Image (cartoon, rainbow, N blue to C red; front, side):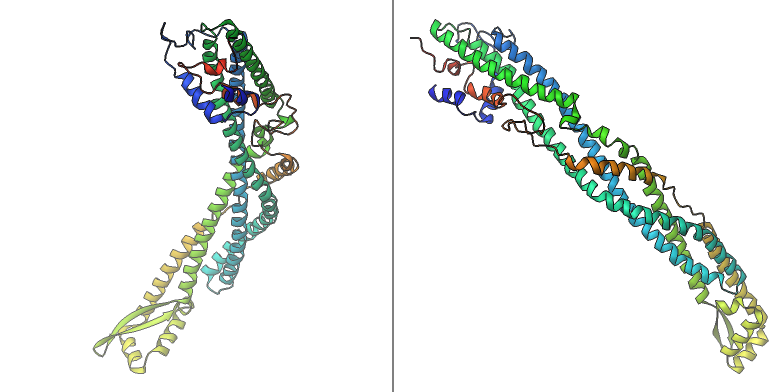
Length: 442
């Protein structure tokens, strides 16, 4: 008993021990007359006035702190959402820069097409240039705008991630205090109250009543002070714990637009990639050849003519074929009919060209996304850059003089909360000795 008394008056007991016994209180079997068990328990309510007050106030604290836990949880969600949204700026900026570079390369290819003598290719080249030139101007402007915004957003994103982690830690701390300490004050009060109804010598009962009254009163003061802090945080968040949902609202309301912008830029990149791929196919066609076979002297002979030559007309094709063949094979081919083979080459080349050009024309349905959201995001970031540096989520600790929160004065040692649990360590249906510790019948 002497050891328990020192625990009460000198050093707060270990929270774990208090929690173990508190769990035992809540699960204690109901008393049976004549067996020495507690005559009262949670079912019968509390009679001791200080314990009644402690029960009422701790119940209110449990509710209020539950609201605060919910708000900090919503803060965590808002912070995480904002951090992810700002991450989109970085990836979108990279995509816009890549698209800007890709359009420059495509313009070079299109210009080469426009300069070709083949009318069909030249027309499509000019058509591509007509689409890409205004897009280039828009994308370059977007790239110039988005790069600095994404760079400015990066330290803010890191701060938001840090705050989200802090909010998660604070939520866990508050939940632990609520569930492991505040919640257990009521079952403990019930059991202590039951001990005071035992038939013990009057001096012991008077001493125990005073002892319990002092402990309950001190603990209730801590509960009330703690609840004052919790309510202050709930009703006046600017004092120490800003409402992040409100603070981040200007940014978070733009998240859908940011996501849409990122998706539109990705779509544009895919379209540009497709156009680039098809232009490469066109380049391969232009640099390639078409071939035919003809029989002569007991076997077949292959003749291949370049696409550019084919597009230059029948006369150019005929000269090229004659140049490629020996005199004997050229004579044999003329007997078979050169015009027929020239016509087939021209048909094959035209079909291949129109097929590729048709795909390219379909690729030209391009559009640069609206980047108006960047202005709104930039404005929101400017506001956050001014406010975020001074915001930090504390690691809540009852042992700290100000509850671990800056700018809030705490008027009582909050260690009384776990200390009340530790004071009556060992109490249970079979033993009320912690209540009577230090009390004598003499």
